Image (cartoon, rainbow, N blue to C red; front, side):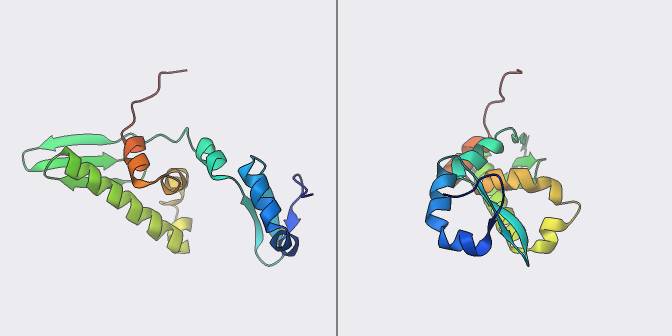
Length: 144
């Protein structure tokens, strides 16, 4: 049995990884502690997606004589193309590249001007390209 309130020691987690993984998928995240590295949490994909659901994207589309530009303020990125579909595809590519760079570079993750992007980057990371395009251009929810 895996304890859920206190952190599991890394060596124990390694030995019980299948159980911890199954618990995470079953909506029971597990804290894992390692003396030299601090703590981490193994959480299920669907749970993390649900936790980031409130971080909506609000792209601004600009139809210009030379083409279409789309500004994504949450990540401070532009997508550009000859038409809307090309600009949308370019924006998805830009988001994908930014996610890769962000995950690969600790300096980027800890930079004061990039840290606020984290929830939207996690959300983007969890989605495939079709889901990301759909999420970027989702209709706004009704006010609650």
